[in-house]
Length: 221
Length: 215
Image 1 (tube, rainbow over the protein chains, first blue to last red):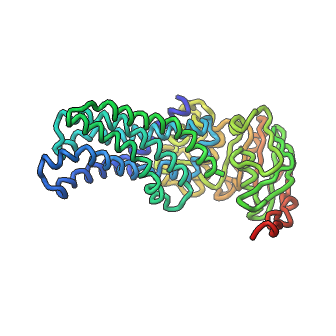
Image 2: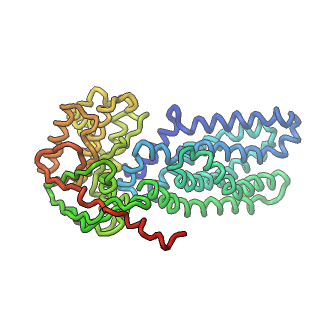
Image 3: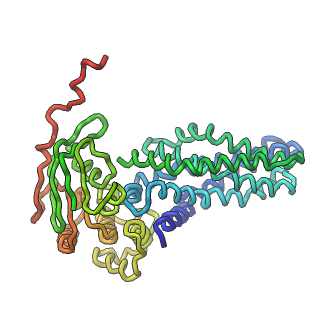
């Protein structure tokens, strides 16, 4: 097995272990989304009109919840130093951790999203477009999250700082992701918004490994 | 194997060390001595290419560029570098692949754990290890990393008498196999050349001399 796969699979394993980020984020996503009907009232028409946006925003908060420990745990126990001395390049380390984060934390959210869509009364025909928009848009959350997590890795209580820095960066993905679902609902072509969400993800994926690894190297000095 | 040429180390605004020069050949070991806070650990991190030098150069034999140099060193510092929730077996398997690039045989890991007296704990999460057991687990990482230059920052900390003797044996074996060791320790270590870093501490910090330019 190569070093890259070893790191990716280990992160995936740790994410799902007790105290890992994945279960916490998934629990938050399900619990928070099921609160909206209580606050907004059970009227299916009202709920359905905002369902896609609510699911997108809540998925973002769930991602924020998991991202602050992305590099911090490795930084605190000295694993980061060993990783920088390993066979992997620093961008390779970041890419492995981004991949593990998306597969371990974001993908389970996408898998349960149809259930939450039903709770919020989203029409069945919109569930496919919702999942597609999340698949295309959420890699940007993992990538941008990795950059900010690397920048704040040595900051005590960096989680709160990270949240404030990250929310503005998440806005483009949110706009295009939610817009593509809305477009499907009102019968217009969703592909434009979807492609823009994909573009944001690809841009973030190109940028994140280089930017985050530079920040990690500074933190490891 | 390793050549330092008038190396200076800076941390933040403070110049810690200047003019550190020495060479380390295969089979040799150097014991760095200095008081707390002088910059021994920083010097080791600079040799591992984790910290840029402020001046001078650090050359690793057969390495072109920092990435290849980092592939030759194994660093033992105060942090364990082990995942608390993973078993020792899981930790050592991952670290061995990450550091040496090859998957260890099942017998190989068992032999290393046995050698370090950790065989009964092999499948327990590292979270339940005592300080000394954790330090022994870190020695296992050294053995499995297959690196030629060992950088040991206070390696005797937390080890009992048997553990210290074991570490001495491991260092001797590593040197006999053509490896080299650069180590910091506050006590005496037999059979190593000693470099006293106290002579390389700058007397007046140059950064504070430019009052005229500040306001």
